[in-house]
Length: 243
Image 1 (cartoon, rainbow, N blue to C red):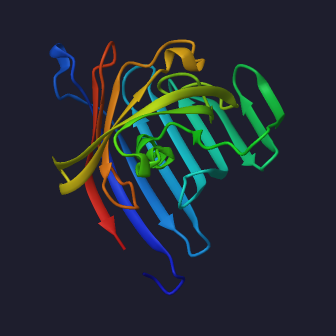
Image 2 (image 1 turned 90 degrees about the vertical axis):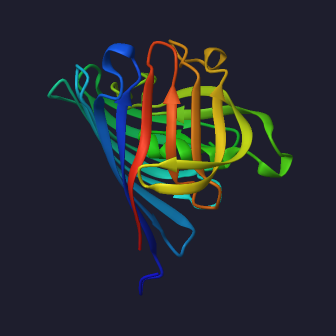
């Protein structure tokens, strides 16, 4: 713990392919810093690179409630195919969402969306954020399936390679219990989750089955994940430093 009262986690993820013709080939990487501030806010910085054409570079800065991962504000900047794709800033209040963005396709976009209750999650597409999303699941109910009725995305594209602008969706989370997991960054006690029901959630294309493991503690550090179907991708924590 620093003099500011902050606790910081820094790490690196590697994206690899599970397709037979590309088995274990590196296809991207992600560098992240998660700073747990004394005011109850977690600040996530993530730099994401996807090598598959058209290549994607994404940088995000996202403020989250430490206990629930509910969004406070965030910014996203995208480069796709070596061209600027868009950038945006988003704010989350109890009764409305505010977004200001610019993208190569639509130009300037100003959004104000009235909501009946606070949004539980903003998906800006860093893989490390997928683990923080699992805080939505109520562990007091034990293993099972829970529906998440409404979240926001900065892009409905599975690679997060469009926008950014608000996009509504819903899905379900399945909790399968705790396991011991070995990844390149070390050995961890983990919680195993699955993301399901994306077909009914509003995405233009259903996301393939997605399994994810995160640390079995309040940090919810991403350990590994995999998407089946046409994606056949794998994501793994290869470096972790806690300060």
